[in-house]
Image: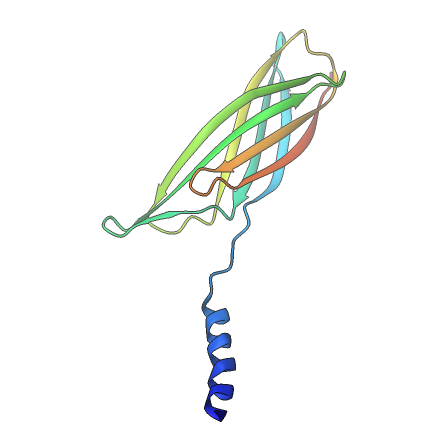
Length: 142
């Protein structure tokens, strides 16, 4: 009976030590800026993402990640423009992918007023369906 009391805690410790930690999908370091093109504005933005699932292809020794993302724009007047940009990134690499940089580029015509704008990123890991949101502000100024 004493053996059970010794091996039972050791077994639990072994099981908890070997269990896989659930990695959280995380978006970080968002940046956005706009270039005046004269008749319009070019908006560029980036955000990094980590904690996504990767498929391991043992035959080709590669790792694949798949991320979908879309961006909404909030104008200074409070008008929300949904899906002003969207993309899917399918990245394959010979080594595990630690993070991905997502890039956004679109134009705003001269009907958009000067002021503070906000971008909302909606990011999804296509292998696990985990989602994360983030935002960043930028200015249209003369």
